[in-house]
Image (cartoon, rainbow, N blue to C red):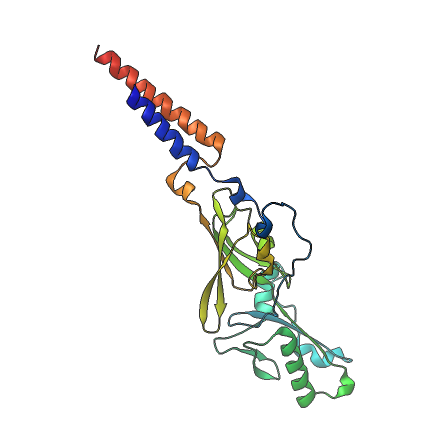
Length: 268
């Protein structure tokens, strides 16, 4: 009986210690001053202008006083009308090749690697004014990314790739669009795998810390991969909460008790 009690105590300790702490499930905690739960209102978000990378798709529109003179530079609308927005953007857009170039009608190849969309707008406008138009043509060029595509894997509701048609998406919005991180997901070490001209780099974000909003990686970029690791509690299959741990303990105790009773009766 003494051994049984020791075994029971050991099982209880293991299960209770394997519960996921409440603080590991809460976003945006003020960890610098843990005595207070209030979130400060003066957090400065950092977002640097995005610089175009290989495989990005650009949407280019040109307007002029006489629109027919720039029609060749704009999509004709011949693509499949049943295609979704992402597919139309793929066929109508200008894909950045492995050398960092796009090929624009009448202008030829233009290197855009590492440039912002505003810089590309100015470059195309200057080339048009140099080769085809005068200032009086009132050329107006807009360049946008044809959607922000990213991939989320690991402990999220619906892993996979998604395209959002917006210029600015933070990590919380990105995760919300693929499903919430479950209790078993590690919110304290979310990985951002980002593409650079020199290759890929891995960045770490602690979503439970309010200061994540100050991170230069708080806003995702096209082609980012978001990976949420599972907590060790999921790997060892223990309870996620105190209630589930108690349920596990009760089940184990019931099985052990039944085994002891059967063993005792057999040996009487």
